[in-house]
Image 1 (tube, rainbow over the protein chains, first blue to last red):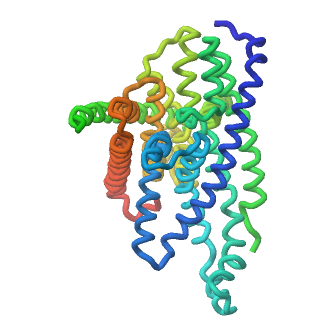
Image 2: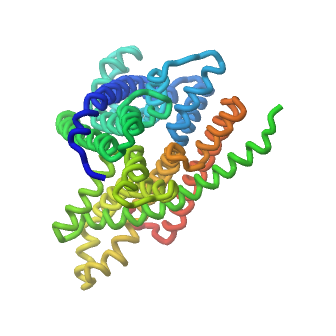
Image 3: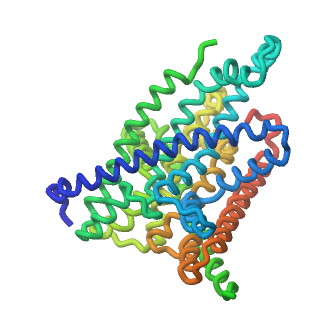
Length: 219
Length: 219
């Protein structure tokens, strides 16, 4: 089958619509993953052993099972117990939870990398727990985490096509509907690939910059 | 009361397909990982460029897009693949690209003195790689390979979308026939998790076995 540029320009607006949803889902998912990850990373530090064990097991479970099945679970099972979510919201929750278990490891490593002396100094300065976290630990722990976090957000971006399986009209789904309407698969599917490749390559450049900017902190 | 035993049989058939896909995908991924990983360390520019292009391309676009491309676009240029072939191809090439970076990193992590010792012993490039560098590098690669295998297992869920009857597909069948969502999806989540545990356990015992006799060697 021939590559047809006219067809490409014809379907471009539809695909751009899809790209917007894809990026929106990635951004919302990233915010959620950043929050969920922090919660999961802090749970083992809680004095409540039951809580920390449960959270630890759940995180392990979510990390060991496919995102697609988790999306189905959120989209199909939750309505049975009365929680009806729009597809995009279900997708963002799925992405956020799944990648939250990964970002949790980044947070954990980042917090563990803050030298013991800093904790002791904070205690010596009579700072309370909240002050220690917000003024001493977090400002030192977060900058080195940024490249690793961004890495996972790029990975998440590449998983967003899965949302098409729960009827979110993102890039992949738009391409599929275009392909099914005109019965031409070559252009839409190749363009989807090209979109992802271009955006990924740009984000890799951004990532390298983040690594240079935040990778090492001056002590 | 629904006849759960029959449906459970369906799910088990799906599990077999998932295991089959994971195994075949892993074999292809392993081959690609070594080809591309060693290719990136080649003396020849062309081989390095090819390996880098392969790795960047497959890491830059999502597995989902690659799978759809293999299944829907390749037939138009004359290559028809069965869903299973397309699945193995996409999974193997995608995970292989990630694992190639692991191979490269592990080989580069072997100290300079090992290479110098090889030169001193008058070993050829191939001999040095085969007898000195790889045996040590393999041990470094193993844990990450285990993680990659689990990622591959999780990625197999995507093949259900190109009508391959794996676990996720069968769960959808059960859902549409019984109207029950909780049971099939919970069952397959548990099966996926169990498979992931088996992989990580297998890799750990393999690691112990390979580390035997290497006590005192810096790894």
